[in-house]
Image (tube, rainbow, N blue to C red; front, side, top):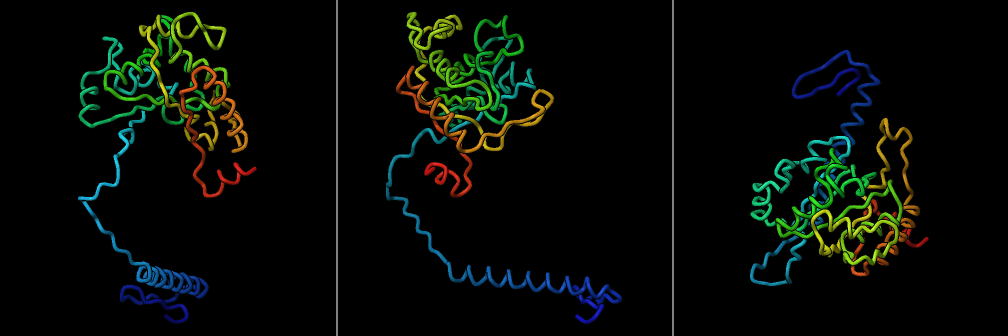
Length: 272
């Protein structure tokens, strides 16, 4: 390589800008040093993996075989009426082929509503008489019906950017409270609505999750011209309120959190 001259792949290129040649030379040098460094690290950090098929470490938690079901309010037919394909709104039942496929695959747990549609998902619009939710033929009772048909555990995602802890408590009441008029949250008797939806007995749902990738905030749209984005501190404060309100209805429930996985963010927030 000389002034204005570069040899690449055996070809000689001349009359090149000297400044660009110098930049190219530096880039090539950095690249070569990077490759050399990686080679040295690979040599120094060699490892041996030993597989012992006869050694039993412990039982595998069956709930690791999960399925995430998307739910977007703006796409009513595929998500609101058909549950992304698993629900037959005409027959009012889970699609048999998907039930069989779920069992064959060994799916043990279903999560709904999934995806960023969960940010503002109002579960209260997905329960009650079908005549009152013509664009939401697949809702909470239908999701629970699919879980029962596939012998799978349910995980319910709670909206972070819609509602408050009282709505979380109402959700637990709908799912788990006995239909005996006790109405633990006051106001609407959600257990009675569940019974009218066709399930008099409590579902006994244990697993809930507060939000879905809520750290990046809402998505801007015509309905949300100024998206909100909660800090880690605000998310944590709200999560604790939800946990207390929900456990007041059913102490057996478990509320999982979905914080950002950036190293140090969660631990530093917890310390504060």
